[in-house]
Image (tube, rainbow, N blue to C red):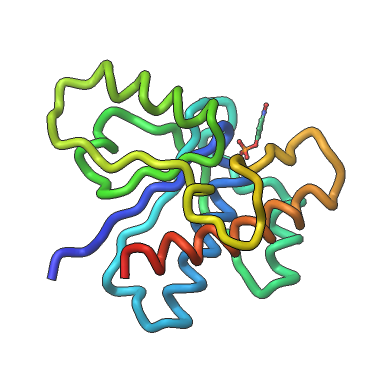
Amino acid sequence: MKKISVLFVCLGNICRSPAAEAIFISLLEKKGLTDAFIIDSAGTGSWHVGKKADSRMRIAAERRDIKILSRARQITTKDFAEFNYILAMDDSNFSNIQDLKNRTLSTDFASIKKIQNFRSVYNEDEVPDPYFGGDEGFDHVLDILEDSVGGFLESIS
Ligand code: 4NP
């Protein structure tokens, strides 16, 4: 069976999208669905390419038994043909992804959505950027992503 591919995207690919990716991986493991998916994350920006996720996010996730193992990369035009779903963390990521898509020649486009379209418990329409804030911001990002990433999985299964 063809695998379903999902790319989570934020600005730097060191805080929100690696957390979303790790939460999704953890959910799939719990449900025995790992083999049915290809999962990755990327940033619209290139500043942190090659770096591990922000240690504050890795520590906050570890407290929930979620391991963030990704290394940052930047989204490319190839991703539109390679992923079924591209999930943006906020409006700015979403419009940057759309701009990039409009500059690609491929017609095989992924479905591009905001992850908060799949929220149910938390009512924020964007995943807030925790990078310049305090430690509690990282926990809040994990709370809202556990809700919306779970909602996304339900929506496609
Ligand atoms: P992310 O957070 O988009 O959730 O990875 C950020 C990380 C770094 C920067 C901004 C946001 N930065 O400006 O370096």
